[in-house]
Image (cartoon, rainbow, N blue to C red; front, side, top):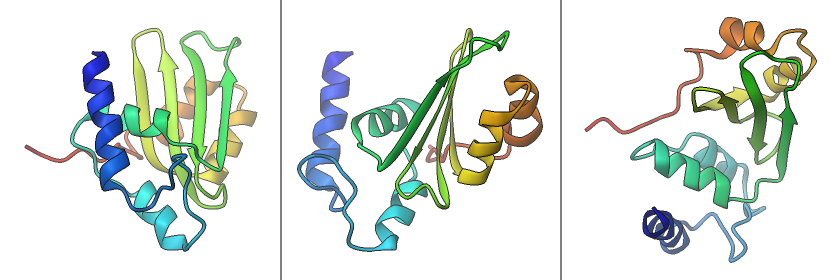
Length: 133
């Protein structure tokens, strides 16, 4: 497992021109952010490594103690004004959603039920982009 993560980290380090040596998004252009948010992944594990090893300019996580099945929600964005990645951690697994509008993240934080909000506004609407084999 560790070797696979190391392989992905090295892959991103050597192949990405949008990141500086500290894995931060460059401030050069808006295109950098768009290409990151609209990225297509080989598989789910690659997406997790990408998100966990990137320092986004905005990252917020909430422990959802009032939810019966969602344990935490996190939002990762390179500009917090348009889109980002949303991670949902449940008892059954983790789910990553891509291109989630920041307005939706803000609304989810205020929702009276995270589960109902997730099912109504996010589930099935913001899939992670995985290459077809």
